[in-house]
Image 1 (tube, rainbow, N blue to C red):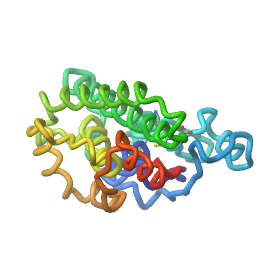
Image 2: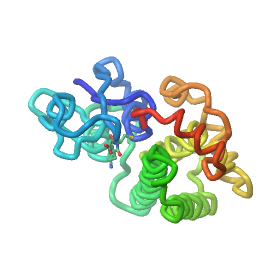
Image 3: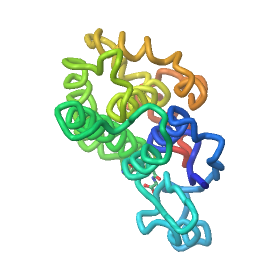
Length: 229
Ligand SMILES: N[C@@H](CCC(=O)N[C@@H](CS)C(=O)NCC(=O)O)C(=O)O
């Protein structure tokens, strides 16, 4: 199998964590793929991606004739491929809880990535209200997760998604200080970070804690902006 990915994509990380938990990592070749605002549309790079996904986003999993996207679909596909721990519980309260957590965490990642694209614009074209609206969405979702974080025995797709969202906030949005006032969620995440699947997919050291709302911070955030999530 081939996984089209970028190293910092939290959505690709979800897939890589699930692959690790299902003991499938060795069967998956990681294929570094260019995506993002810096790649002009209608280039050969986009044509290659368009051949496997009309959405021009990673992750994409290629398994023989299968072309699978997005992260939710790929994770469920991998869950069915091996006997490793079950990531998508059977229908019932536990499943809906896991899927709702996945939706909440994916929403955090979507909003965070929209912020990254907005921060990549020239200063004079940055839409501050839009950035604030996305940030509000992230903070509200974090509050929801903090009220009922996954329990220690729930390392399912909901927990994986939440862990990847929080890891991404630590990596790119340290200035948000998401742990403040969210003790339950912070404790849960800090206990889980040592898990092998999380360690092996860690994007590396966090970037400096800089707020793009200050002009200096904005310049720094823009300098750090890359295509990779
Ligand atoms: N809902 C999708 C989201 C995937 C996504 O947003 N991927 C980002 C990288 S983190 C991407 O490829 N963005 C490229 C673009 O928007 O041009 C999933 O779950 O896989």
